[in-house]
Amino acid sequence: MTITSTPAWAALESHRQSVGKSHLKDLFASDPNRVESLSLTFDGILYDFSKQRMTSETLGLLASLAREARVSESTERMFAGERINISEGRSVLHVALRRSAGPFPGSQFDVMPEVIETRRRMAEFAERLRSGKCLGHKGMPIRDVVNIGIGGSDLGPKMMGQALRSLSHPALGVHYISNLDAAQLAPLLQTLDPRTTLFIVVSKTFTTQETMFNANTAREWLRANLGDELVSENHFAAVSSKPERAVEFGVSKDLVFPIWDWVGGRYSLWSAVGLALMVAIGPHAFDEMLRGAERMDEHFRTTPFERNLPVVMALIGIWNTNFLGATTNSVLPYNESLKYFPSFLQQLEMESNGKSVSIGGEALDYATSPIVWGELGNNGQHAFFQLLHQGGRLVPCDFIAAVRSDFPLPKHQEALLSNCFAQSAALAFGRNESEVRASLEKESLSPKEIADLLPHRVFAGNQPSSTMLLSSLNPGSLGSLVALYEHKVFVQGAVWGINSFDQWGVELGKAVANRILPAVYEPELAKMLDASTQGLLNFSRKHLK
Ligand code: F6P
Image 1 (cartoon, helix red, strand yellow):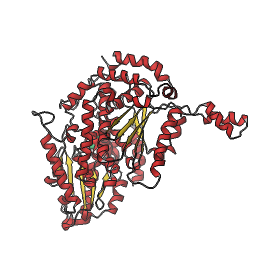
Image 2: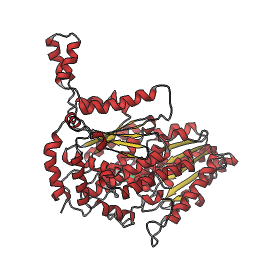
Image 3: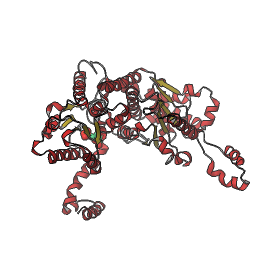
């Protein structure tokens, strides 16, 4: 039986006939307690979902759906270390990475000793770098650290490093390189001193093409600049679940940090994949981030569905996607330091839940992950918000802001917050014809001018959004925020009946790229390829010369 044939799904379908069609204006007017009943707080975080097109009754029905989908049982199976990632035969234990103590998940299979030992080694290495005791060429202290990785081996630490940049070490540069396009690495290398630069090659598999290209180029750059005197081991550290490959590359065994097959790349920020982040913000702040995530894990595991932040957030997404028909979800941070948060969430949500077969392999006849996209909200207002306000499409939005600024200047923060709140209010309540007419009449326009302008000035409203307010951007609140989204994705995957922890969809592109690369050099090999690719290669070959 699929989730769509349950009584809870049917109840939501019929509920949609009434509430789904109500305007947010009317929903607010009919319930003076709406904000109290449709918002949650957690540890300095306010989650206001009163501007979603739903009521408390909707939430109750959605919670029944989660019960019918046996979300609690799935959660317990994850926390128990069962191999819930069945297509890869793996446990899913990223929650272990932020636990303070073991045994976990159990005394038979306890991952905590190696987790804690790795944390200790990371902290020791990060402190050595931060205190100038980690030496590069001829005893010169390392001044710049470059994280080379892609996807989960880049987005998490880069996003969090930017979010916590107010805590960054003042003298140590920490940089992130992911793109195969040399236009990312080449300009960075021009600013770096090879004698005082250390690269952290982060790759779970240590075979990812982009990462290996960039790591090899980094090694060539060191060789070209330091010649025979290069001691490669002074300039590389690595994070991998294949340590032997890192050692073979030239990384000292002592500077290879492990990750395990029970950590998915997009869930690995908390592991040694976060090493560059720890170098930037220090082990203490890193630990606070883990504690924030651990508090969210506890909340997620123990709180009844209707008050459970990740569950509620997940269910709202399901309501919007499967019952109201939304196909996208926009993430709009009102904080410059959260500028990488939308791209982090894109991987987390779309790589996890962008699936159209069930965990058992049956084709699904309902939608799963929406297309997640977003941009800094204040910039977006002057770019794509026009479509959100008047484009006529349903685009649920997540507004995210920190109340206190991490880089304050007089009066900026108040103005920024009022813009954030104004946008969600305007999207929700719009401006109807009579309101527009009244305001145009004040502008002493002729009746014809008013009639002509009217349709252009009307805002339909009813665009749903949630607003997440953090009291400030700090390691704890951000740890909680990221864990919240991780569990949201988990709950959605459990309700949709899919495996959120594999990513077979990215494999085909990798395999095809490996077939095309030799054909760039060897025209004969292109003959095996499709006509379009041959045409693209012919054009490229001419211009590569
Ligand atoms: O492209 C898919 C992917 O496997 C992601 O899931 C992962 O985060 C990324 O590539 C990087 O993989 P690795 O850490 O093995 O280099």
